[in-house]
Structure formats: C-alpha cells, structure tokens
Image (cartoon, rainbow, N blue to C red; front, side, top):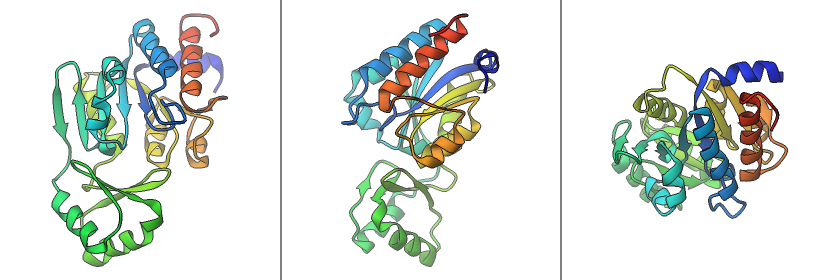
Length: 237
C-alpha cells in the first residue's frame, strides 16, 4: 500500500482498534505509556474513537485508569462484553453458556480461567477440550490466542464485538485502523481499512496485515500511529 493510498484511506476511518496483550503493552504486559499517549494524540488530531479489544475480562482494565481514560469503548472477553467508560454502559453479547462451560471444565479437570462469560484454557489442552465439545455436541465456539484457547458463546467473536462497539459509538458506517498480534486478531485485520501487525505478531497476523511495524509491542504501535498522524496532516512523521 503506497503512502498516497494510505493517506486517502485515513480519510475513511473514524476508529482506532487495538488489541491489548503484546500489542498495546510493554513486554511485561503492563500498559505502554508511549502507545497510550500516541493513541490520545491521534484521537485529538484525527478525531478518532478508540476501542481497546481484548480477551481479558473487563475487571482487568478497571485497575488501569490510564486505559479507561483514553478508551471510548472496551471490548472484553473476546467480544463477549462491551463497556463504554464515559457512560458506564455495559453490554453482554451472546447467550449465557457459563454453566455449560463451567461443568465441562470441572469434568475434564483442566486448568482454566473462568471469566464472566468465556473460559480461557492453556493451549496444551486444546485437543482434549475440542474432542469433549464435539462428543457432547456443545454449542460453544473456540477461538485461539497466542498461548491459549477461548471457549465462547456461539457467534461471539472479537470482530463482532468491535463492530457492535462501533455501533454504540455511532461510527459503524466508517472504516477503522486495527493493531494486533495474535490469532484472535486475524478476522479484525481482514475487516480493517488499515491493518497493522506489531513486529512480535504471529506469522498469520503478519500475513493478514497491510503493514508490520519495525518495533515490537507498544513501541511499534506508538511509532506507526505517529507516522499515520504525520501523514494525515500533510507531512511525514
């Protein structure tokens, strides 16, 4: 994608969507101050909304005031929960399968994190869990992240959560910029007007992206956002 085309596409977008872990973070998975500052500047200078989209539970983000302060929406639990910080509105997406998931995990005796809606399981248990779901005919979707698999209500995905959040923010008719690193970001990358993989992303994410940053983690996000802002304002970053 040439800079002239990128500059044109920037006029079509109204939203910046970022994954959290390994994308908008430092290597220790704390929020990257540099990335958040760049996001804040992009919001102000390009009039963008910002959506943080993650497999993490909503409660995790509540401990980080700096994330809540900059986010117009948080898509948590891989699209199962949408939270709008400014109004305090929270929506749970999809049917309630929590009791089904809890019973499955207890029966299989595998280590798992049970969130409000979804379940996250270490990837090493993938085959046993998928086999159990198939044998029992459970209506549960499986989505992958870098080191885990997530069990979700049918039809729920990170992408669908982002699209629902965009409706809530009244920007659904416009395009969006996406940053990500893991398999559960691929569908978002393919839908995005401008898709950017951080340097530490998986090969699958890099293949789905229009651009790959030269730096990893939040440093790559910050650098590329500043480049986009500079380009949109008529010059270079």
